[in-house]
Length: 278
Length: 330
Image (cartoon, each protein chain N blue to C red):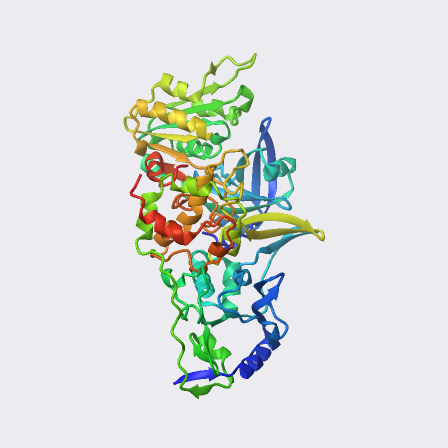
């Protein structure tokens, strides 16, 4: 863990790019100013970092890029609170702060040879995108990849411009669904759990990775269980209020587990074992 | 034989400490006693038991600018805060020294909190043993005791000739160099008795009672005033926010309470711990279950009794410790 992060000191960084993904989600590409720190900032899919909008505060976000490509840190940020609203005001060239990386990550090395079902709802796709990218970049290491992405409306599908690229990869399937369609939408209009049922994912030698609103996770789990997925085969990443990322501020604990240190990635078996309900 | 300092020499010692250090001690202010930097030895208030508000602030300020962000021609620079003066905390009781020892576990654990560490290293603790235990105190049930010198650098015990002086650490010995101490046959009075609170099997009892209705019944009367966290020597939860002042951004760390609304609520609206009973349980589970499980059995409570004395609706950790032992499971 970087000592600067332990000091709660962010690395001064520059916003290199801002892209509208949906009406309320922007993709930020951030470069840490100090080249040595940038080199040291190695992270894994599922880890998170704090981004500072100086003067307003800092918040934790799942890192949505992959470390090995070395083309900047990316965060897909939905405008919901004060920090995210301020970030949405910023333009390329603005100075921001980055602190991290923190937390555990998806154990992709354990998933080698397995079929992977990625189920993301709304902004829940953000921490899943680096998983998809890593699998696509090492396509032969894994079995079938199915990406199931749901959103409120077609305009809320955050990585819409990447779906084509993903689905062109061998042995890879992208399935989309929305809660409400529009006049141009020709795809599914259904809630995510119903699509899980429809597609009848096979639990044989596979892993389901889920991220999205708690209510979506809850009902998707029901369907996965019906398909005979075990709790060990279902992996998710938890969101919690946190201020330090170091297991000190005591804001993110669920029972005796700190989401920032033992998490944010947990299997459903681990979550079922928590003394406190998430 | 004991080493004794007279009350006159104690005043002289404090005067000499004040020359090159900040001395923080219990003073009378706003109708209560609290730890504040003193200007002269006469400011110190000596009264039985611990001060209304403990010395937690000396090492973990209530509100602390951990760094400022300055905008300049080159962009942005970050200037972290450091402490440049040595501090002596004088007149704290064993419970509050134990509070710092408990703070050390999360704060100095890897990676250490640099601000706490900096202050901790520059602080010397001169404590006074409790010869009287006021109502509400129960330190003998939480791993300490009214005469426990373990977590202090120097321990003073009041006797008729002045104070028996015990240099507990090297730091304490250094501070005592040149201080006139007299050999004396004085013996400390026996430590005061206090009612025992059942804490032996508390971790198991907390696990057993975790899902019991007990917590929501107890929480019904909580007003979320947060005084329990405010006065607690072991409550270390914090918040971090930005403020702008004098053209600079101040990143400020401040105390936070698990009983406060919004403690766990996310910007998107989801709150993993919305129920009152679960919030109340969090406070006690942290101290009596999670903390001892994480830190080799050490309770997150010093028995200082402040929350017991100050809770406006009489939520009493001593009663809770006893109640949970009677809950079978669930």
